[in-house]
Image (tube, rainbow, N blue to C red; front, side):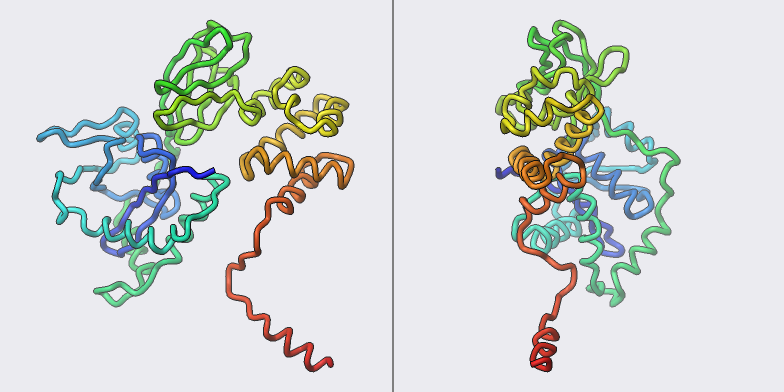
Length: 340
């Protein structure tokens, strides 16, 4: 399934290095999470950041700057100053605009297949580092110049900022909460009518009771179209906590018959382990890929555990092998000729 994602770029003009992160939105949770991960990767916090096209965190209205509550707290926690470019002022943002184009042409063409935004973002920071070259004016390696950039940064705080926005919502008769307008998230039906606390993060939504007990977690939905988390994959985190609901779950109803029958016979600890393994594989390969892997593991080995399912998932969802460094197979041809 194709999705349109946004990418955030933090550019360092002195070294000409830039770092990108990919998220499904440009809201304050996504921008702050991108900044946090970049700060931790480079090992410091810039003293000041100039934002362009960052309406998710704040904007300039005449002479006044208005920022979101999440971003204001984030900037105070990490101790950096900030300002926003003036509209239609290209001379204020030339470096970052060039860096955005450079990263798009060098890292996002052709388009990637992404199973997990979190895992991809971890790799992406290293991929940005690998783009370092000789500085176009200074004649020095950009990676080395970034070390000088770090010397001008402030250190990371002892405790990382928890990028989250909390809202409250009342569960419907079906135990669902409505967030961000038209997005519905399932909870336990026994919580119908209860007031719940919803933790909105960049890619996840956590739902808690008023006492702070985690009920379930879902992938965060974005966009103006209505959405409903009532699909099999969205039930897995909740089932992992409350395995007693397994036999009446939608997950069991849609699994292949042999898989469901196998899981029916498991004790609670083993069933919980299988459900958590399934949830992990859904995060990497999607629902269909995870179900295919589980079916393959069960038919091949007669059991479902983390290692067999992971191997089956890798096999079922593998594409052609891509090596980190070019591989010259000509040496094997030469060896075979000598052997003959």
